[in-house]
Image (cartoon, rainbow, N blue to C red):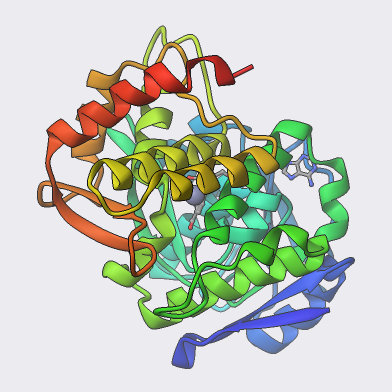
Length: 356
Ligand SMILES: NC(=O)c1ccc[n+]([C@@H]2O[C@H](COP(=O)([O-])OP(=O)(O)OC[C@H]3O[C@@H](n4cnc5c(N)ncnc54)[C@H](O)[C@@H]3O)[C@@H](O)[C@H]2O)c1
Ligand SMILES: [Zn+2]
């Protein structure tokens, strides 16, 4: 078992990564929430991963899909917690991907103004990203993840065994997030580490977790440093929001959107003279090596994308992007909308054939 700590002082916790990590749950509950007398397990009907928290438990299910990340589902969870007699010294166990951990984490953050929770991450995307770092929340029609809280889990279990049942598209989606880490390093001023792609799965997950843990520990509440984890995400969130609009007729999984966003960010960086074509090609290659498409979906409208990007909460002044450059990936404020428009137009043109 590989253990990666998230060093947050009194909120420190450990991420356990490996085959069978879910079986560590009872021990994790006993050591991190010693006063708990009962547990509520939050999961989805299709997941089929059973866990034993070592306590009397109630099981609540939430619906599948991004639409489930809503305030009304948070309300039903909190009502379920209440009916189960959950107190503030008990524990919520989220068993699922990012939808479940974002929802259960936010419900736990809100219930009794803060109830402990533990994540058992069952998707690749959850294991390398969503289950770690304490960002919890839900969507509203105006945008993704606009309502939420920072609420750190007491422990995270990343059981690579349960990934065997993951549908291929969910696997690809996790790969999009993993591709992001290939361009991030585990410390300031370190070169990106291309060797990520060559590692065995458990080590790939552990490497991504270590990068995320280090960034979160240095900047828990998202100043510029933690924003690095949003590499590729400004366009990705806009694509996801566009896809949710009535009549869009296309959809992208989160990591699929991140893959497009990474290539877009590289092209924008080139447009701004920060990197050269070779570096853009590296982005395309990394995304391609994970079997992901760099192309904008044919139905995506650049005008709509820009308006969503301007609304994205990370773009509080002007347009803000996380961009590659001579010193590696960094946050760049005050980007001219004209450069974004030009890059989107160029992308629509040049990557057009590459989405199958
Ligand atoms: N909080 C954060 O820091 C953070 C970071 C990245 C992403 N996210 C959020 O995560 C969400 C996406 O998460 P996701 O990609 O894990 O998707 P998801 O949670 O929707 O899971 C994908 C699908 O796989 C199913 N599934 C889960 N585990 C399975 C298993 N072991 N076997 C078979 N099927 C399984 C789920 O039921 C679902 O249908 C987005 O809402 C995104 O905003 C949050
Ligand atoms: Zn992401």
